[in-house]
Length: 406
Image (cartoon, rainbow, N blue to C red):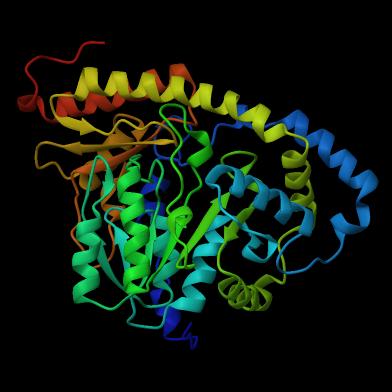
């Protein structure tokens, strides 16, 4: 049908990654592709208990309309959490509750980005952020990274040449690469934001599931002028189905984003906000995090050990200290997007081709892939890496010194 859609809607395109992943959705395929938290780590009994309490004692609040900014008690708890983590001085005027961190990306783009504005991102970066931003017709600039995250000098080089409207970064265990920005670089990036008067959206959903190393303060904690917006989520620490996120930002930014949210969905679900409130208030988060960290540490360690053992000749792999992902890059010119149909069809294992995570108009690397370690159990990880390895040994035998043996 020839419907008269807006020009903006022309930027709404079917995600190539979603279409690719449909090939890996068959029940006989082991998927290393999804970005899913492990259901065994959901605090089911705690949620059930809190839900009963909410429906018994807070029925009217839970089932009624609420204010756009979010339930005051939850915002107070999140302010307390953030200030404890980063020694910041946020108050509830700095806080907004959203439908997951994904909504924050859309809202921030809505109030900051005009067609043709430049957004500076890591390359590769989170695909969901690119999808949210693309609707607002931006251009992209990309910084360079190494094992310590994005390089500040590469950011400044771009800031000197181009008028950047927004920077978007994931500081901890970045999706898709699993790497983190070092402490000195966080400080430098905050200074650059202040120096060039450019806002940065710091997307930090993985920070609290660090299973190795020392927690690092946010980039926002080094920003004294309000240029850094800090976003996080309950999806990895409570339940992704609740679709709960939070934003900490300058009150003037919060006010503008609240107006944008009002025209979209009025407010975030009151019932799930109350569950999150009691989850924080009663100390359940503190008690539950060690379970998540322990489980993910074991899975990540096992997966990377197997990857290095069987595929270390052909690939380099990142070594995350938290989060949910490992990034692989081939030492040879192998197109992992083109290989994917054979990988899923013949070998019955799925990954995410890395090409999908690179910003439009920027350098694409087809010899990369992302693997998820959080969702599968130990036996599934072993079998998944076995199938993955078998494919590479069979399809590219010249790149290995010996035949594949488990």
